[in-house]
Length: 228
Image 1 (tube, one colour):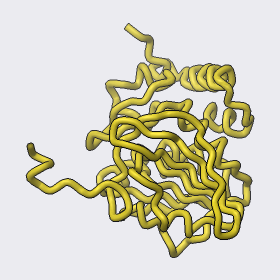
Image 2 (cartoon, rainbow, N blue to C red):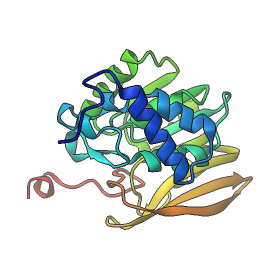
Image 3 (spheres, rainbow, N blue to C red):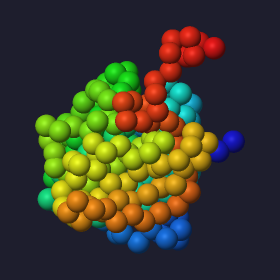
């Protein structure tokens, strides 16, 4: 049985070891690694999974969603190239873990979640951690959040069949969009950098995320499909 690092108040050591592991895997941004060391990931996973909270794996959370693998969180955050002045949009709050990482690296984070129960649970966690530079919303993330645009970076934590044009239009010139794009079974994690009215595109890695549901994402299932 895996020892639970949170049971004995030793989560900081477990988080530091996780950051060292991610450095060995190629994550070079020290600000990102320091932030990963400072955020208690066990606060964002179900109680029965706390013993594996600091392993480099994705884990299930409420509503058949997941908390992303720490390597992917670190890779996406590094690719966003945040500064203390950055205004950031996150699509898909989920557990709130990625939001907690981002909030410590930017001036303001706007995060939007489709499922109210996930958004509320994430708000409670972020409040306990004293994170005050976060605007947490419920809605269709595929449309972005125009009221707070433009953004220096947008991170999408669910897989899209194609890139939502609304998100590209809400970037600042030079802004970065990090998004998984592809089929339901497999996506490529892409970075779009806005250059006026054109976008430079780089592939970061292959990946597999849950679906990005919404107007400019995957079509929402009907009630009959949900129960079949």
